[in-house]
Structure formats: C-alpha cells, structure tokens
Image (cartoon, rainbow, N blue to C red; front, side, top):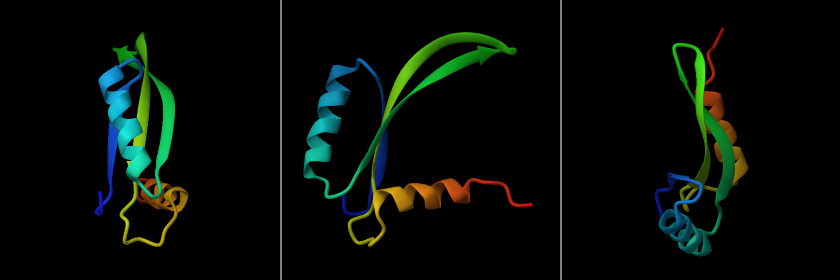
Length: 80
C-alpha cells in the first residue's frame, strides 16, 4: 500500500466489497467512487453494470487523494 494502487469491483461482488472495506480501513487516504457503465456493440446500447473504484495514493506523497485524481485525469487529457 505504500506505493499506492487502484482496484475495481462490480457492485454486488460481496467478497470484493469486503476486501475494499478492509483495505480502506487501513489506508490513510483513499478515494472511493461508484458509477454505472454500459456496454455497446456496433453503436447499440447493451447491459449496464455498477462499478466501484477504490484509489489509494502513495503514502510518501503529500498530495491529497483528490489532487492525485486530478493529476491522473490531467495526464490523460489531449493537448492542443
């Protein structure tokens, strides 16, 4: 956990949810979000699933989880 990491689970996966709860209890800082994703095939909407995300930034970093998430997001944005 010292180097930071991220995990994804589908909502309703009890073993994964319990694992995320135990890890977040030990982490100093973390970001947990839940959102819905939808599959598409040739432009046609498919099934939807709820996804739970847990992000733990590195312990040695002075950055907050929110600023770490913003830094990651910014690194994925196209530059003009």
